[in-house]
Image 1 (cartoon, one colour):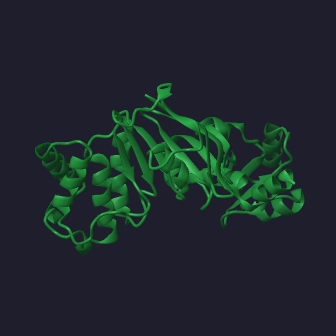
Image 2 (tube, helix red, strand yellow):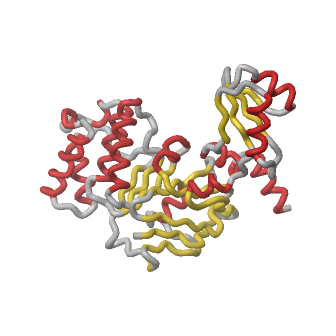
Image 3 (cartoon, one colour):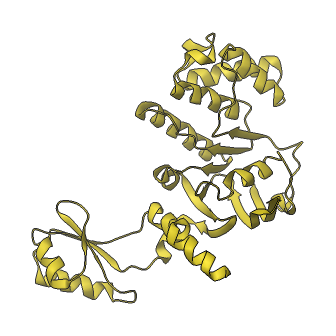
Length: 304
């Protein structure tokens, strides 16, 4: 299956929140939706979930307008929405039945997921007695126990300790490998980079970058070298470029268009080098370049 948002626009009063937003997510691949606070991510997600309509544009599934009566969504919201004083098992069954499951089907699925996430001992407790991380796991069960076709995860690792984060990582990997369409929104770039094949960066209501993450990385200029050397200070001084990134590593930045192979040979011939590699930009580097303050300033100047 392929899910597409095509030319989505949404205005609230005088504010254009989404402006011709288009993105695609495919079965068995995760798409990361990135953006600063206020960029329009939540609005895009709510339109996708049919919480409210767009002003224009379409949500398509396999090229046709999506039929919300036939497609099952699983949604883990950033703002958690369960009942703190209700018994965990009862409310999980209740939410599963809202998604079309019979009472028996819901009970079996809930017990399976409680066991999968190590939460069976808590099934008869009230939600408010759980830690924030365990409440997060209960919320995840509401998103997955009805076997949705499309899964939307908004800050899924928020509040989790390292052990529970590792458990959730396994679950997310399983969901992707099961062929679900997964839309992943997070400020934690390491998780986006780990799980997402595709990304879409929102800035001021517009998609400013989108596509296969590996292709995006390969398109970046290869003009930086990471050097580990006992002569790092000498290298910086003599080449008049570079910055220290660890105690024994420096980064040398050359003008775009530089023959990087020639630069590598120059460094290795002149200095005692223990390790030398071409720097590959991280997702955080890419995000800052497209959604950081400098980009926003340039965007505003271009509109004047």
